[in-house]
Every structure is written in C-alpha cells, then in structure tokens.
Length: 71
Image (cartoon, rainbow, N blue to C red):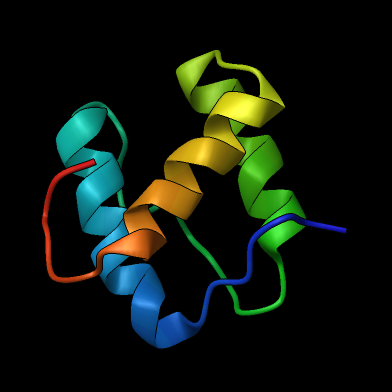
C-alpha cells in the first residue's frame, strides 16, 4: 500500500510542483487517478530515476504545504 494518499483536487497542485522540480515531465506522463498512488509512485520512480523512499518523501513534502509552490 502506498505511503501517501492524494485526492484528485490536490493532485493538480502536486503535479505543478513536480513539473517545476523536474521540468522534463509532461502532463501525459503524470496522468493520475485517485486511489492509484502505488502506480503513480512507480511511474515517477522510473521517470526521475530515484528510489521509492525519495519519491514518497517528495510527494509527502508537496502535500505538506499546498499553498507553497516549491518542493
């Protein structure tokens, strides 16, 4: 089970933050459906060539302060 839970509403903000950090990521690559966090984590791991722990930490950090656009 995924260590993070992301709603569709929050995903738009999180996606923007990820695209600012990793400017090569496209909207199509970051396609997400609520409840599919595990698939999202695996996809991001492959796209940014990072370990699972780093990707989960990055997503948690993005969710921690939704008003801030930085990661």
